[in-house]
Length: 365
Ligand SMILES: Cc1cc2nc3c(=O)[nH]c(=O)nc-3n(C[C@H](O)[C@H](O)[C@H](O)COP(=O)(O)OP(=O)(O)OC[C@H]3O[C@@H](n4cnc5c(N)ncnc54)[C@H](O)[C@@H]3O)c2cc1C
Image 1: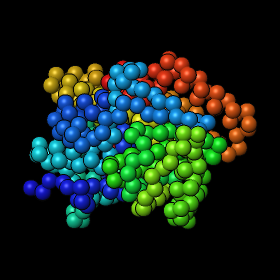
Image 2: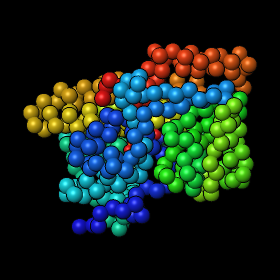
Image 3: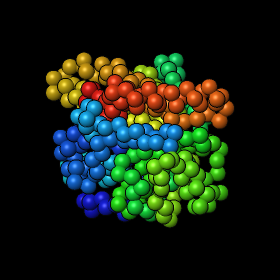
């Protein structure tokens, strides 16, 4: 048996500059399913976020508004926990496969072919095939174009993301809208921080000096309260274009899509990984029912059930994105209206409550 995965293991996707925020339902799923409790011992509970505009921060207090929290726990750590749980439970996981092909998903002989890391070609026959292969999914392409609807929009901006060796600049996430565009001040640990600012999708990340990056981030959070970012060495900088996408239906024959294979959201609402875990929860119940009772009713309902949550999360992510970002061609009316929207949301308990409920995961958990 292979050694348990460590943070330095090359099977872990370290290049992923990704999720950090887990809804309370995602945390419960990880702990209830026995993956392990590291998220509770090593993750950081966040009871709110700050919305910052006009140079002032407005706290959205999740505990006060909806009695819930989220956890800051990087996606790499979730991956380590899931992989370790599969190894512990004797699961057969093949890392580093290539040339994946998905075949005959509407027949009794559904199969997947891959070339393993050592060059061996294998074919696996399966009763149920779960396509959880991310936003570039090849499984999705096994759903014929005349059966599938691709709902898709692209945004005219991207995120410039950095990882820096510095202490946290704030205890919770700050979502800032400024006249220069959006910035997100996020955290990763006591010594490493993650931050983003809105940029042009064609921006060349490597052409930016550290000083220029820090000055750009700082001017987007400047305000009368003197908020000052704690600067440090930047050891990763990249541009992340984003889009909203939903594949409908998420099931075709014996093939079931889950996670980014079926839908992607812009990262502003921190929903992507949470949606992937929510799909898995719905699919697990359906598979459990199918294999224990022989009833396919929940499998038949899978796509509709999953999509109900997906579309709510799409709405939330789209809303947060449009409220906080500034299009380069925005008129003065549009810029002022957006500030009016932020003032309306933060100035009303109902407004703050909607945001808190949607951000922490809502009643669907
Ligand atoms: C900047 C950024 C910030 C984000 N922040 C958050 C956040 O705070 N909260 C949140 O919930 N989400 C966040 N997300 C989104 C989140 O990272 C994704 O939604 C999540 O990774 C989706 O998980 P997945 O398992 O569906 O896909 P992935 O994580 O992409 O995993 C797909 C897997 O399939 C494998 N694979 C792909 N193709 C093949 C193939 N042909 N054959 C075999 N294997 C294959 C890949 O190697 C990979 O292991 C963020 C994303 C970005 C870009």
